[in-house]
Amino acid sequence: MGRRLIQVLAAIAVMACALPTMAQEQPKTGGTLKVRINADIRATDGLSRDANTDTVLHHIFETLVAYRADLTVGPALAESWKVSDDGKTYAFTLRDGAAFHNGDAVTSSDVKWNWDRRMDAANQWFCLPFFDGSQGLKVEQVATPDPRTVVFTLNAPNALFLAQLASVQCNGWVASPKNVGADGKWIADSAIGSGPFKLKEWVKGQYLELERFADYKPVKEAPSGFAGSREAYVDEVRFMVIPDTAAAETALFAGELDVLADLESSRVEEAKSRGMTVLSTQGLSWTAILLQTKDPLLSNAKMRAALAHATDINQIAAARTNGVATGDPSAVAQASSFFDDEFLKWPEYDPVKAKALLDEAGYKGEPIKIQTNTRYQGMYENAVLLQAMLTAAGFNAQLEVLDWAAQLDNYLAGKFQIQSFGYSARLDPSLMYGVILGDKATDPTAQWDSKEALDLYTKSMATTDPGQRKALFKQLHALMAKDVPILGLYYEPSVDAVSPKVKGYSVWPAANPRVWGVWKSE
Image (tube, rainbow, N blue to C red; front, side, top):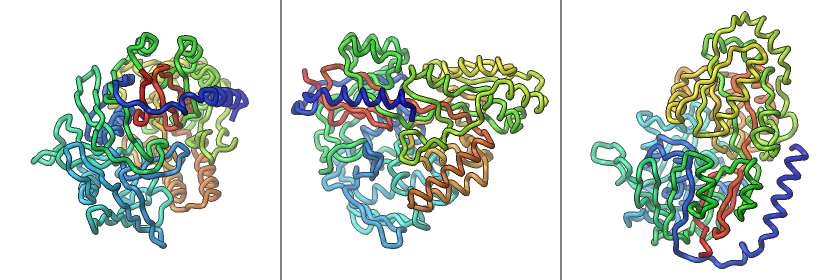
């Protein structure tokens, strides 16, 4: 970790400790909390997703287990679980009094129904490979011995089974079967969950309004991350779609918005000068440049190596985060307990070497397009910086600015040469490797198609020994530095600004805003 980053985070920690009244105040019920999202959610079924969709739906639905703020796994819909001596059977006990928003009790049969639905290949759940055996872990059976007990049987012990169940991005939560019609399809905009809030109104492109679920009965564990008690205090939460960052800041400063997540690092001092509370921590959201290795040009390893040598990741990180974050090319974040400086080893920034590699590759100046969007300012600015660096190294690099929905569709279909992109936080390195690894023939979102890497990744899940896992991660990173299937840039620090009226709010490495446990002083 860079000295500058340590100093910044330490200063923020001191600032947080200087606010004892936040911890001493007793929660108040009532009121409406307004939270900015920069784009509308994609759907309510949990299958079509992005970061905004994850944030909203995890207030409505609950996974069996969830991540705590310290990145361990804790209770959510399941209040406890037991693991068999052979490590292959997990028996979960559902939370006492858990109920869906329509009043139906949540039962183990509901859990199994949701599981079977997601594991149906026809539904194209993007986390299916994590559980169907194609990446090592296979759930062989889900049994329901009684209404509050659900038992998962695995093909072999696996270090990541609970982590995958808790994955924010997988949306492996439990929904009421009544969200699905007689035709077996999800009813449009239906969202009957068991979480602390229920969907009240969705005005497409403008806002989603949730109301507190009065019959919610939380687990006894203290709230932490997405785990533990999710007791809600505000009557309503309005997730407001405000694409423009400047407009969102203006709304916050004017009191028309209560929570602005993902505050630009360069805007921290301005927000503080306007009386806002600014909270920050190291992040786990990986900002990266995607390379389509099946592209006629980029299938050449020398072309990809040239791209790596032409890109100054530390300069991009410094420019984008105002010096808060440093470059990190690895799928192992600096916030991870597995991280050390070996994960920073990468083809050095050397434009002269990049030009030489282009000559060796026989590059004739063919256009190379960098897809980006203006919905996510960081993606756009990273693309602009990358274009300048590539041009200086002899590439004919061109920007292709799309709307976010179109760019995301291209990502899902693998239709790009280069994309400026960002991955939502994965709370274990194996989870991040699991996202980028795969067979491009069957999974267009896979960025790294390598059997050797996939074997190492599978081993990282099969062992629970931290030392062995770290050694495997180092082998994976060394192989990635050789193959260059992707250009990792940096991990976004989690920086949120909130109104001084907002109490009980906190940030965490996963970055998703959480508004249970939050109240307003007036």
